[in-house]
Image 1 (tube, rainbow, N blue to C red):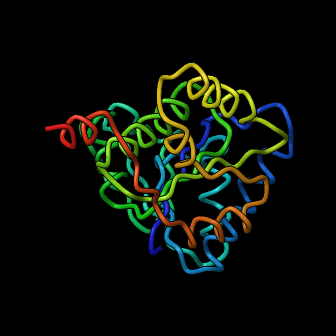
Image 2: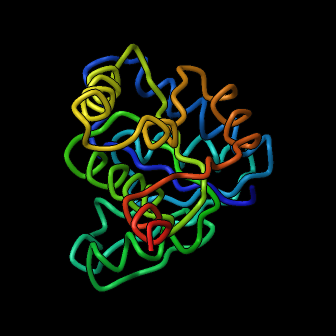
Length: 195
């Protein structure tokens, strides 16, 4: 993997360990020579992961919509900053640039971004690894919801396995580097097989 997209909160959260984990992830990316692709902000966990990657001599690419491009928000020291028209273009560009995705803790935006790449993975639009950095159990409710969707018949069990969850950044990256996408059975492939 040459580049990993990290989705993260623009707030730091209430626990110092969130920021510590973001910094550790940035450090691990730099040490492995993996470029960071992220939303371009200097705030919150987004800023923490970028700062740590840069401090470790890593390359950092920020992607930010023009409407958010304000001096107090945009990180001024990135390797590259890509300005886009809107949030849709931002997500598409981050997807295009990246070989995998990691979600740190975050709010609506982070959850929306990671569920979009999970949905795209389920549909076969990409076969890139998707990881949740499960700091202090932050993503346990999401994992429970995924299992609930499986048990209630909203998607097959193997579709619930396209997400990698780990609490340690180095371990998560190692698992993502070893990732082999499962051959997902979908209703569309099942219908094609019946014909």
